Amino acid sequence: MAYSGNNDDIGKRDKTDVISSHTLEVKIEDAKRVKAALRQMNGTFIGRKYPLNNGTSIVGRDPGLDITIQDNSVSRRHAELIYDNNTLQIVDLKSTNGTFLNDKPVKNASASHGDLIRFGNILFKVIPPGDIESIFHDELHNLANLDGLTGTYNRKYILNYLEGEIKRCGQLNLPLSLIIFDLDHFKKVNDVHGHLAGDYVLKETVRLMKEKVLRASDTLGRYGGEEFCVILSESAVKTATDVAERLRAAVATHHFSFNDKKIPVTISAGVAQMSSETSSSSELIDEADKLLYKAKEGGRNRVCR
Picture 1 (spheres, rainbow, N blue to C red):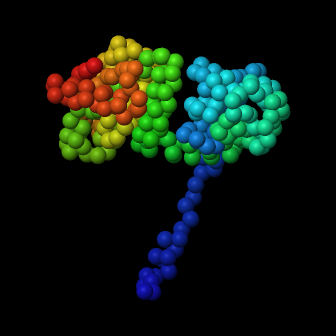
Picture 2 (cartoon, rainbow, N blue to C red; picture 1 turned 120 degrees about the vertical axis):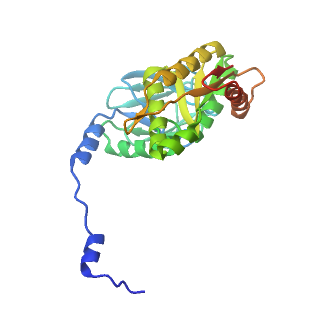
Picture 3 (cartoon, helix red, strand yellow; picture 1 turned 90 degrees about the vertical axis):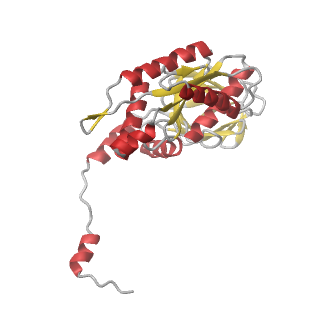
């Protein structure tokens, strides 16, 4: 069917937006500050970036290394990297599955920016400092792994990370705890104040927790809707319960206000610790979820362990 509008209508539809060059300038300045890094090109955590610091770094599966790769094809201490702002020296540490540079096995070799390095099955690209392409890949990584509304990790990332931490902590006989919490009567917030207010409450809750309560080692993610997870690696249930209680108190005492209207907000939480019988993330999540339900039944605005 032919378009029946006039030329003015066409002009309005085809009008080019005028934008400021400030956004591009900011991106370029951000790129200038990017350090050299290894970018993971495959595996569960594809897109993750590991900065290269001057001096020697150890790569392997063991926790506490400079670059820890959660994959069983990688040896516990797989390779040594020596970086000097220009050249990257790779030394294989007698790994089981080998170290490869541009798909050729190496024992001791020099890599340049843009080269591909493989430890076992996990492939990395050497990213030069000041590379604007790195900003682009960071944004792709964020799109794949971060929740669009709150900016914290999404469900997919949290499940993958928790699965890896269960294996790691189990192998090393380390404690691991999980907090699952959600916002009490969140539907009422949306019904009374509107969905924009609900979005504000979710984002403000995440900001509050990141800035005021959670430790650097804690991993927060949005599990779904108004429900969130906190993974506390190498933390026993008592420590996790203390963290959960601080989360609860911080939310209960915070002043949530949207369009000059105060919104009362509280959370309920369940806290579970991995046991010797825990074999998967779903088992630990189920246990924490049952405790969350118990907190809800007990009157909300409380923590159960």
